[in-house]
Each structure stands twice: as C-alpha cells, then as structure tokens.
Amino acid sequence: MNEPHRRSTAWPDARAIAARAAVKEAAHTAPVMRPLPEALGQVLAAPLAALTDLPPFDTSAMDGWALAGPGPWRLPTGGTGDTEADDRAHGILAGHDEAAPLPDGHAVRIATGARVPPGVTAVLRSEYGTDAGDGWLHASPAHPVVLGQDIRTRGQECRSGDQLLPAGTLITPAVLGLAAAAGYDELPTVRRPRVEVLVLGDELLTEGLPHDGRIRDALGPMVGPWLRALGAEVSGTRRLTDEADAVYAAVAGSSADVVVTTGGTAAGPLDHVHPTLRRLGAELLVDGVAVRPGHPMLLARLPAKNPESPGTPESAEDPGSPGSPGSSGSPGSPERRPARHLVGLPGNPLAAVSGLLTLAEPLLRTLTGRPAPAPGPAPLAETVQGHPRDTRLVPVAFRQDMAVPLRFNGPAMLRGIAVADGLAVIPPGGAKRGTEVEVLDLPWSANAIDQAADRAAHRATDRMTGHQAKDAGDGDEEISPEEGPA
Ligand SMILES: Nc1nc2c(c(=O)[nH]1)N[C@H]1C(S)=C(S)[C@@H](COP(=O)(O)OP(=O)(O)OC[C@H]3O[C@@H](n4cnc5c(N)ncnc54)[C@H](O)[C@@H]3O)O[C@H]1N2
Ligand code: MOO
Image 1 (tube, rainbow, N blue to C red):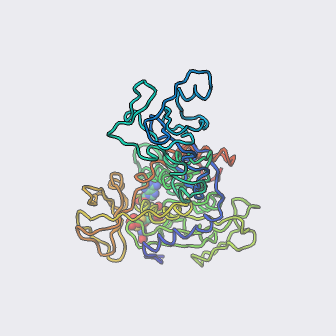
Image 2: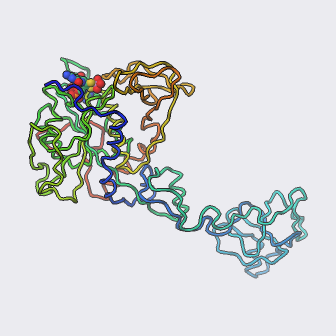
Image 3: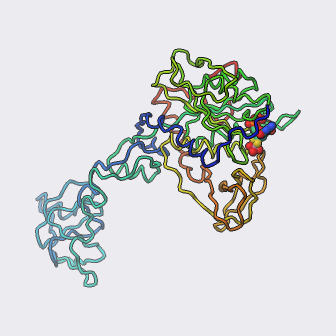
C-alpha cells in the first residue's frame, strides 16, 4: 500500500516532541558518582556548590613582603634560635599553617599563595621595595602602598555553599580544575543513556568493494560514533538480515534505553520497522517528518519490558492498527521499568544524518541532561532552493561567517556532509542569498571532549555496574540474528 507522507510531523514539532519524549526517564535516572578523572566529558547531574571558601584563607598574590601598617618597615634579623624569629627570617611560604601575627611597622618576606598572617595590611611585590641591608624595607616612591594591595582575601572567588555551576554543565578540563579547588574528589554525573544500533539491509557489505548489486554499509561505522558524540554510551552495533522476525527479536530483546535502527523505515516489502513496532505495541510519537532528506524517519516509545520474560515482551500483534497506543500500563510491565525509545533512521545515508539531528539529538539531549544549544544563525552565501512544503537540511561550510551550501547533498550522498561545518535549515519555499538561517552544529565541533573522554567513561561505567560492554569498536561486530542479543 502506498502511504505517501503518512502523518508527517512538521520539522520543528518533531524536534520538540523528541526533546520531550524522555523527560520522565531523565528525571528518574539516578546520578553516577565519578572520581574527577573519570568525570571529564560527562554532564553535572546537580549544581556544583563550593565546599569551601575560595581562597580558603587570605593569601599573598605576589612574591614580596607582607607589611603591617605604614612604612618604612623593620625586617626580621633571624638566626637567633628562637623559632618564630627564624621563620620570619626565612619568610612565609605557601602550604604552611598560619604564621604568628606581624607587629605594626614590621615586614616579612612572603611567597605567592602563602597564608597572610594576622596584622598584615598589604603586600609589597619584590620589584617595588628595597631592602638596603640595614634592617629596613622601603617602598619605591613610584609605587605607594595601598591598603590591602596584592592580598587575595578569603572568599573573594566564592563562599562555601555558593553555587559555582548549574546542573547540566559539560565537565570540561576547566570544570575539573574548579571542582578540585572547591574541594571535590568525585562529581555527580548524569548516567549516559545506553543506545544499541541495529543496521538493517541484506545488501550491505562490511568490507571490500561493492559487487553483485551489494554496497558497503556506510551507517554502521557512522551512527555509533555519532551517537557517542551526542553523549550516549553505545552498547553495540549489530547488523541484521532483512527478516521480520530478526528485526522483531533484536528490538524486543534489546535492553538499551534507546534503540536506533537504520533502513527499513519506508513502505517497501522488506521494510520491517513499522511491522515490528506494531507487533510490540509501541506508540509512534513521530511517524514521518516534513523534512528532506529523511522524511520517513520515526520515533516510537517501546512498551516497558517484563523482567520475568526478558527479550520477549508480550506480543501485542495487531497489524490492523498501525500506531496503536503503547501498552506501558499493561500487566507484566511494572511502572518501575522506564519505557525505552526507538529512533528509526532512513537507510539513505544523508537521510540517516537528518534523522540523527532531528530526532536522536533532542532525545539524547534530554537523557544526558544537557541544555539546548543556542541557535547559531548564519547568512547564506547562495540562494538555496526549497521544498514546497518540507524543511530542507543542507550541508554547509562556514567561509567568512557565511554559510556556503555544499554540493553532493543528495539523500544517498555523504560527500557533502563529510566536509561540512553544519546543516543549514532551509524553510519550506527556500531561502535567498544573505538570509539568516539556523545552522545545526555537528557534534564533533561542540563536543570533542566527549569523544575523547568517552572510552574512559565507558570503562568506568562498566566497572561501576559490572556490565560487560558488547561493543568496543564501532560497527565492526557482526552478530547473526539467530544468536540474539548478547
Ligand atoms: N514508495 C516509496 N519509496 C520510498 C520512499 C517513499 O516515500 N515512497 N521514500 C524514499 C526515501 S526518501 C528514503 S530515505 C528511503 C528510506 O528507505 P528505508 O529507510 O526503508 O531504507 P532502505 O530501503 O533499507 O534503504 C534505502 C536506501 O539506502 C541504502 N542503505 C540502507 N542502509 C544503508 C547503509 N547502512 N549504508 C549505506 N546505504 C544504506 C539502501 O541500499 C537503499 O539504497 O526510501 C525511499 N523509498
Ligand atoms: O529521506 Mo529520503 O530521500 O528524503 O532520503
């Protein structure tokens, strides 16, 4: 049966639905405490409140002399065997307990970061003072001493309890440094959603050159790393044969938070995604989007699994009612088990990218607790023809702050996106040269840290949960459907 456009959702609405779809799951996910080195690239699950004042005590900002009152100042003589006087003679160094009070009219050498003793009214940097060797210190006339100069007072940066960063902050190297300074050994992080990738298509080869009508699988190597860059922990990439039962078994048996399929979304005889969703009693949240490429993409809520019969939720086979409501309230699906989601990416490679940015990105953004990216509009360097009704996503490169539309932007092509800086959002009807259009970021431009930190984080999570990761590489694992999920 021909189902042109099914119930196509407008592109902005599809993104909003995807962003809202997992709000409940995100709220019910307990944070994971990670030691600082393993928190890099994760997202803060709670606001970061200072555990101490910063600085924690008054410190000298410079190497020089701590001064008490107006000058000239008496310098310590030292070497008397009296401990306090000896200390004075050597000066005050960083990392020591508070020194004895400095009497008025006296000065003592002090190092940057050293604790300022009571009675000190200012610090004079070495280059601004003269110790003539007669036991007196004079300030250079060009640099009159100002009360409090070069002293960092306790709590100048924050007081204990102050909120330093909001929940949802990406943990960068700078955040690790701030957290350490503020007294943290470990950080509460948002648990990464587990995603399984299922690549559908008998025509796909995993190595060598295309032959006999078969082509290389371009999505297996691409989708897993792309999802990782969006903050997911990819538990595996499996290639399935084009058999209805194989697709059903793989989706029903997956324990991931999100299943991402590629191919099989259209209405062809081998398109098994819709029948699988019907058989599972899944709820279609988005079934086709008014976007080019990628219009057959879909998003579904899968029914909660019955822990008593892992891998085989009760069949709700009902081919007559496509998009029948979810069965999350059905017997054997306890409320404790959050529903999972399925993102169906079309098989044409650039259409799959369009699905990643339209549906997977907002869904994972919610599940990873990240804030929505600030829209990045840019003027178009050339007029771009639009689709009469649908939004177009076109690979662009930035040149002198203009978005230059790239060639090779057909649904089956990756040559444009491979050299792109982003995807321009062309509204229905097109956009003229110079028009400001929204440009969707590619996740590696924004989240290089995530990718770098991901493997370490992956290992850490496995250690914490005792979970044995199925996938170490991206899409290089081939499991026959008969083997079922590991
Ligand atoms: N009668 C209609 N036919 C099609 C429609 C339609 O509306 N009516 N839509 C077209 C559009 S648009 C797209 S996009 C595709 C979506 O198809 P599927 O999601 O069902 O994907 P497949 O049929 O499996 O494959 C389509 C195309 O992509 C190639 N492909 C699939 N997987 C991969 C992969 N992993 N790596 C590289 N290439 C892949 C596959 O060989 C096909 O050429 O449907 C249109 N048809
Ligand atoms: O989704 Mo398709 O051609 O628009 O790639």
